[in-house]
Length: 223
Ligand SMILES: [Zn+2]
Image (cartoon, rainbow, N blue to C red):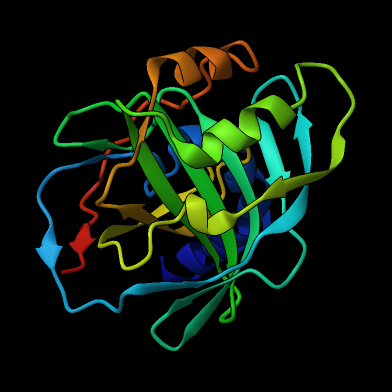
């Protein structure tokens, strides 16, 4: 019996990696986005952005608008250094708070000095105009048009300094839905105007993945 289990184990290990990767979107147990409800309060370090205005490459692939940053935009999280790689947008917001859905999310993807992928999520409400978006909107390429190689942006206009956050273990929200991504959802929600939201929707369609089961995961909350 023991020998048989070992053989099965070896077989599974030999076959599993490729299949598991392909199937994670449907079989993964630590998927994103989620609905954040009950949380555990922890003394987590504050987010300290050390970023500056820069030019980014922007493309519109028909699913979202993506801004790619050159190295040098850093988000400090305690002793950890997170290097900003890209911004992209989701309508509606994806991650929810106590069931509430938000009209827009900014996903700021970072590579951690420890090697992992860290996604910082800014959820928006409809209200006053967003200054960063007011600058950015006229520069965003339409669906199917050529990428813009040098669009000016100030990342600090998008990532509020000192904001508290929720954190959970999740995944990429599009295939291959790779797990092991750390998600930090900011507790502070900036606003954009209804007009700005309508303009964004002319650039890309609704593209948020539905919320995924928690499967026993704990969401932690910073002060
Ligand atoms: Zn995203």
